[in-house]
Amino acid sequence: MRILDRYVLNSVIKLFFLCLFVFISLYVIIDVFSNLADFLKQKPEPSVLIRYYLSYLPIIFTQVSPICCLLATLYSFGKLNKDNEIIAMRSSGLSIMQISKNTLIFGVLIALSVFFVGDRFVPHSQTLTQKIREEIESGKRSVQEKRNAPITNLCMYGMRNRLFFINKFLPAEQTMEGITILEHDQHQNLTKKIVANRGVYKDNLWNFYQVITYDFGKGVDSIAEPRYQDEEIMAIPETPHDFLTQRQRPDHMNISQLDEYIWKLSKSGATGVIKDLKVDLYQRFTFPLTSLIIIFLGIPFSLRMKKRATGLSSLGISVIMGFLYYVFNAVSVAFGYAGVLPPLVATSLSHVVALSASLYMIYTLP
Image (tube, rainbow, N blue to C red; front, side, top):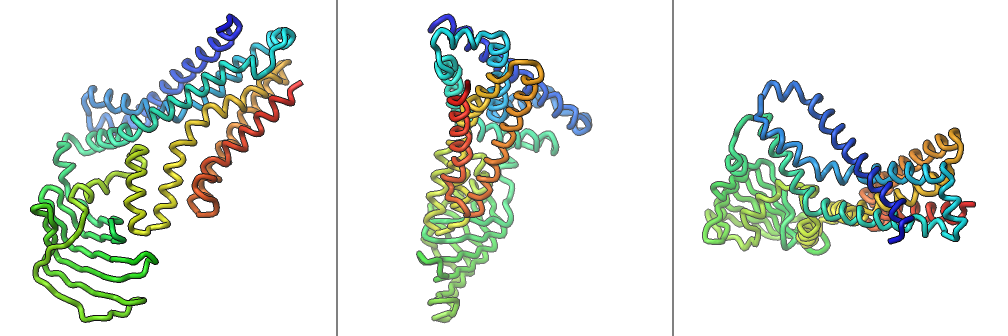
């Protein structure tokens, strides 16, 4: 690597980590003061609070990395331009892309880091912070006790086009109460309804008690008299673990878990839910690119910072552009949830537009 490349890159790296440290510190300080009353009331142990804020670090990193990239790019390239160092570099025959090449490579590494941390650590961090928060708010209730706590009003899309409604699920006893199962065909027409008072999982099979089965033809007109059985073994592939994991929210899953969850739901034909989850899944891949694209946005504005007034104007415009980029992305994703745009288009449209605009501004620089 040339001395000139190291000179530019070192400035960007130092400012990035300085901004990251400042944002993390501000977040912790603000959160401590906003929850100070609860902490004084519950009096959690210092080790619990330390674990609580340490578990937040991956979440903060993924959220503030794009802003840190923007500020580091603006200041570093703005200072180079203000000191006429950019003019000297370009006079030697270097283009803007050659000058910013290593900064862009750094942006790629940050994007990969955000993707890795977001997939490997953020889901676990969100689950852990939620558990610690509940522990702080409700006292020292054991984790196992919480895991075995009854789940009420459970709704689950299962295999073979089944939709489960369960009034109460008891994980410790592997028992369900108040069960309603709706079976559908491939066109989402109701074909069967099963109502049971109780279900017990034993010997890898579900045993239902006081079971009433309704068979339907086209529409909802019953084609046969309801069948009643005092006890029936049901051919249901879902295990108690499958019902228990319904407590896990999609944002607490990693990419492979979310993809598997979508595949399971696809068997039930829940198109609306699948569409929303696909938007979430594609966002896991496209959001990390924000750090790289925000660098592309910052470069052309920082190189227009010459005089003080012009510099402040360019800084303000670049921050506004970054804000509009986030707004555009939020609107695009909302269109994806609403079904107006396909999930992949909804999650990548803002990135494509922002990258195209950035490249145009870079290549039109004087």
